[in-house]
Length: 168
Figure 1 (cartoon, rainbow, N blue to C red):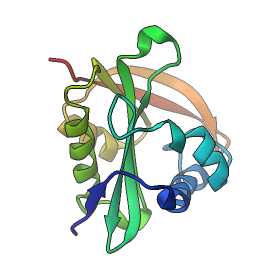
Figure 2 (figure 1 turned 90 degrees about the vertical axis):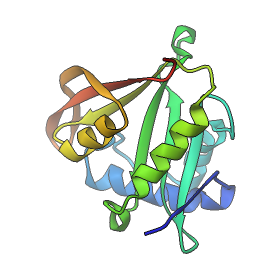
Figure 3 (figure 1 turned 30 degrees about the horizontal axis):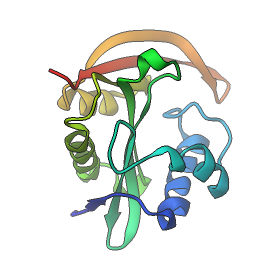
């Protein structure tokens, strides 16, 4: 399936929020517990992305429908972490496994070349072998494992930390 990978527009926000809320309500991929309104998502998330720089958002569209996105976001709030980013990718459930995620991540990492970023990190709730293999295919290596660090759906979950150099 061919997807158009592009920068977001405000009209995408409802679809992006719907995709993320699916993962909040149905999976442990994110440790958010409560779904977001479109307005919350605009204020707390969408507005901090730009077309260039360290923090970017790319959208996948198929036949005019937003079906996923990839981001590079602040790794931590303290200033010394500024040259590190956390990457994330989310696809509408019906579009997983069709190569769209690969296209999104390729575009994200291409757009980050030349930016002042030293490392990218991905935090992967366990178990999630597909995500681990996906990130390894993009050059991420496991650098940590936090045991029972998140509590969701009445259970504790482990998270593996993956790292990719962007400055070498």
